[in-house]
Image 1: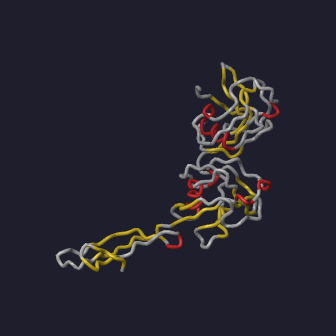
Image 2: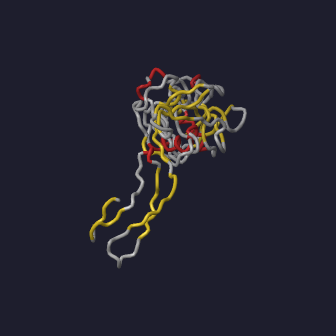
Image 3: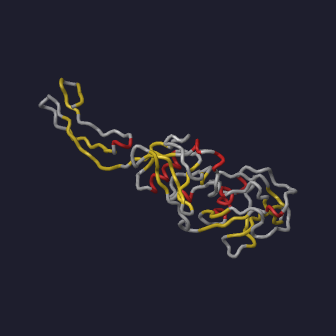
Length: 267
């Protein structure tokens, strides 16, 4: 399918408005019944912005007058063009203009970054992921949660990366609202708010049995040790190894010595 051309109409600035799509020389709108932040994110990036702050539905920026050209749009948030997202095809849909979809975009760093924490783990490097919103902590539903999402959380907390992205409330069920669902990071984002997701809301009816978690690691230091053999003709060899915090479920390299020619054993 050929890529779409889009524009934002009816906003107070060029970063917000009703989403319109050009087709057959005329502009039309999108039915917003299933519209979410992932879809708005694709539109915003098509227009040169860095991401989406909101994905308004219900004609927040006024009702369009052209045809309703798209419905059932479902992006994963990483597409380069709205045409590459799943949708019901270009048509003339009977969905009312009262459902016209919109987008509010931003450039640069996210103006409303999330604050996150890990709860319920055996140490500070693991736990249930919780997000601060409006002064309260809430959880993340684990639908499509993976290592790339956990990596962003871990780096936000000062770690170097993620070892695991646990699901199914491994670190216990939270008690606050479920604030995020369908989080999809590419792993390079500086904040979870920059990742594609359905938008902050209260998804508590989905149940805390699927609270997402993270297990992080830090690269603390570089250690050196020597390997000595009983063969006096063999030089002492210095080996450099990466030492990771043992609490992060990683191993520190151990020195080995030889008890007989050609064999090494742990010291």
